[in-house]
Figure 1 (spheres, rainbow, N blue to C red):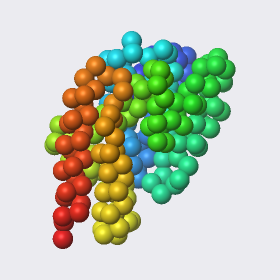
Figure 2 (cartoon, rainbow, N blue to C red):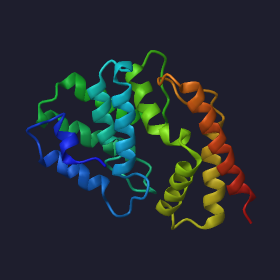
Figure 3 (cartoon, rainbow, N blue to C red):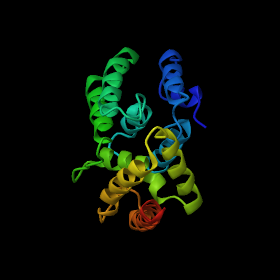
Length: 203
């Protein structure tokens, strides 16, 4: 699990900003967008840091990308980007790196990665890594997402969720950076197809 010590690897002298982020990620309404999700992302980023042009910018983007999260809000990524822009200069982060972190946080709204965007590719791969997880882990993820949207009626959730998953299933390349990206994409497609079948086939 992610702790303040993980944040202090980036900012040894800071505790206030890191504690605030951890508190945000620990909000009780979260079921999937939690410290566990952040931990998975940071693990992927650390394992493939050499694939990024600025691995620390990617790490910071991971910390901030869901720092603001309300299930029904349309602007979580934008508000998270604004939080990064407000916090990072006070920690001594150079303006160009702040701008890169803000750009990367915004990128997670749709995971559209341009060719040659090594930082964006690694961040998107880390954020979507759960899609390529083992079936049991994927099932827990899907259940956690349902819990976050518990207020949505069942029929509306099934149709809406299936539509969202279909957009991912329609992408021939879900992953852009990790060495096993073809295998990751194949596993993700299997998981997505299985969940869509369950959603649309349930009574």
